[in-house]
Image 1 (cartoon, rainbow, N blue to C red):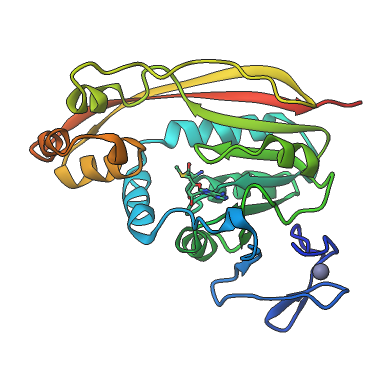
Image 2: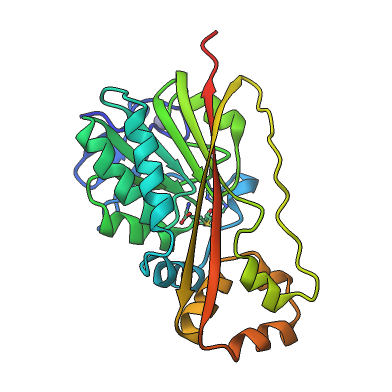
Length: 274
Ligand SMILES: C[S@@+](CC[C@H](N)C(=O)[O-])C[C@H]1O[C@@H](n2cnc3c(N)ncnc32)[C@H](O)[C@@H]1O
Ligand SMILES: [Zn+2]
């Protein structure tokens, strides 16, 4: 079967030959033992950043496996199923260690389709490939996705860098773009500990060239983190870890329990059928 991924150099199809993925022009990429392939082009400036490091991936795995964001995962799978697309190709852009990808993949398999995940972090992709053997995974940048034009039925972007022009390029006409962003009060109680005057997240609806806005779906739940380790794991997967004074982080370290609000918006767009 042909791969969802194509050659990142010349965009031709990739075929498996022993432990490599190869295109007709002879570009060749090794398949790692975990099953993923590195399709990031190292001579491109945007791939000099390497995505999340091993510690960030570890924190996110510890947190996500606690199931605190399960309501979001369920709602996303619900929305994927409701598209009613037969044999969809789903691409999870900036998929991290595949916590959500794994469930999307199960949903998409039931619909007769296939799933691919990309992320610039090798540590994250390695974890994703190990835990979700039914999906294809590649180390790649969201700004240069190794997928041919008009291939995907659904592109998902959850808390990762946004590349609307690339999403437009890889989506088929009428294809869905699910954009998951934090809602106003996301992680409010964490911010109350960290900042004297916490601000709500800005809620705005952007337009993207070539896309039609369809709907916004909100997901909200409260959960309790019952150890300092889990509270710090949550902090480590947020941008606040880099933006907060040491003294505030020390305050957080003294807590052994914290009730937190999770609040997401899933913004649904479709590639215009023109
Ligand atoms: C906050 S995490 C979200 C991961 C996953 N979607 C989730 O919600 O669990 C952001 C992810 O974007 C990845 N990332 C950052 N820059 C990237 C880029 N230019 N291309 C692809 N992935 C990138 C990071 O490595 C990280 O895994
Ligand atoms: Zn090639």
